[in-house]
Amino acid sequence: MSDRATLVTQERTEFGKGAARRIRRADKIPAVLYGHGTDPVHLTLPGHDTMMATKVANAVVELDIDGKKQLALVKDVQRDPIKPIIEHVDLVVIRRGEKVQVDIAVHTTGEAAPETVVTVDAQTVLVSADATKIPESVEVSVEGIEAGTQILAAQLDLPSGVELLTDPETLIVNITQAQSQEALESELAEAEAEVGIEREESDEEAAQAPAEAAAESSDQE
Image 1 (tube, rainbow, N blue to C red):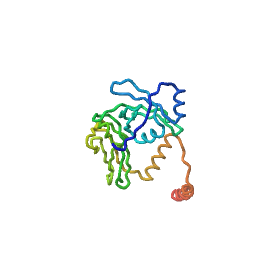
Image 2 (cartoon, one colour; image 1 turned 135 degrees about the horizontal axis):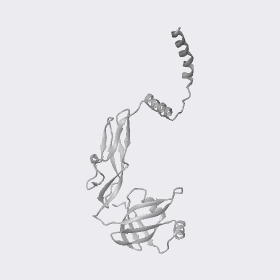
Image 3 (cartoon, rainbow, N blue to C red; image 1 turned 45 degrees about the vertical axis):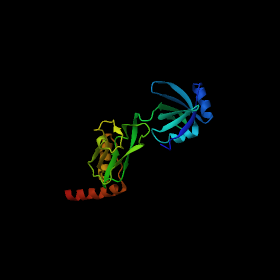
Image 4 (cartoon, rainbow, N blue to C red; image 1 turned 90 degrees about the horizontal axis):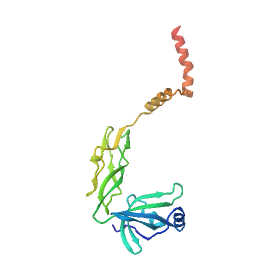
């Protein structure tokens, strides 16, 4: 792919938390490259370029390791839970023409039939794909689909050359009937009653109570 990122990197010999902090302060990212039976290679990646390259899942990058080129799949990205920085990257050696197993995201498109709820039960599916032609996601159209419809993994429209590895019977998308407001309120009242919560009367209910009591008394007379 012509838009594949090239990351100019160097092997590193310093390890540990202190070394990692020094690398990050220099706007670089510690990483490790492994695969194909080779010994792990510890690297230092350029911060900004790596951040841009890893915005998509299963990114394939070309590493320039001290002048030597190597294709790699971004296998794992460890991000700081608070700061917008990458703490560490795991890379896997790949070769042109080989197949890799990766999880790809499931996205729905279109609008289902009125008064339905669309639930994506499986956010990703496992596939086997050419290492240099990994799809970013698989799209599932729910346009006009009626309640009661279920879309299984076997029904996914995968790109040519991509093989499904997830169980074909796995439920991917479930379209159900939307509940009415009355049904939701009834369920809530039942749930509250089960745990002993008494619901407060609304102003309308409070106003109706004396009238209902008077009517009942009149009937008894």
